Length: 431
Image (cartoon, rainbow, N blue to C red; front, side, top):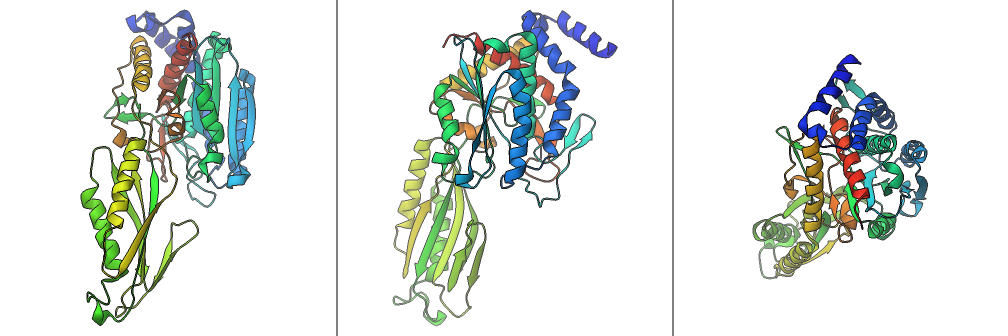
């Protein structure tokens, strides 16, 4: 206790800390004082499995978050998503004085670790902890709660207009998105600023600010061809078969699509005299013989872009490649509705500038813009056309989406302080 008090007195005497208002100083002190409570909440959330397909588990995590948000004055609703075979979403609304910026906070209840994963429990190791979803995104939800509790303690929450959407299927979203992201999109249209509480990007000890996220779109290539004895391959009558044709198309994708901020991947190929994909399109079966020209090849892949315009342009290029002549074969490509892009905008940069003003007053380094190639797709992209936003207000973590996922627990402190002060200041800005 004496060490903590001495640290607070030392911080209060520093020039940076002196730039904070009394209420902001109260918020930073509250975050520090409630640190172990925050870690305890994280442990509780992590130890409840909430893989995207674990309907009961995601629902229970939603109940845990309801228990945190309702005492803070939020009206909490559970939006069931049985129609897209997912658990549902939390939507929580806090009515302020109606004068400041309306804020949308985004996080998610689910993880990539389903009930059959061997990685299930929270294990603390000093100021780090392993656990499924410890960083992505249960750490982010803990930052939300810690920041809001700090605002309540300082008396700044009462005037803030905040809507929170915690989706239950971010890691494996339900289809169609017109249903599974309906409530998030509607919240984005009501907001003046969107804050995404997925993980903080830290590179070589430097915290980075994220103002963009790339899209994620899957595609399926189907090539059919004449079959026959392999002795006739490459003749005018037999053609080259489905596997060679598919290979030429995929090779053309690799060589001809390259441009800044674009990546594209081939994840699965099956081909032969017979080939098919499973219902989830993540596994395939094929049959064929070495002396038979293959009649079918199926290819699955993805593409990631920085804008919807780039997505449309690249898809057009892919369609043109697929439409070329391939001896004895026919090809077609389809695109699944995926996650849209969150393009970098001046509005997003303005929010990062506000966050960096908070950093300066906290005595923290400014956060430069993160290269969008270093982030994947995320829910904030669904509202990016309607509202300016920031990404990465959650915890610092390593090894996300894999056994051993580890969160830097101390990052809860600085992220909650940043968020509480930023939200308080935005709540005082005129709409």
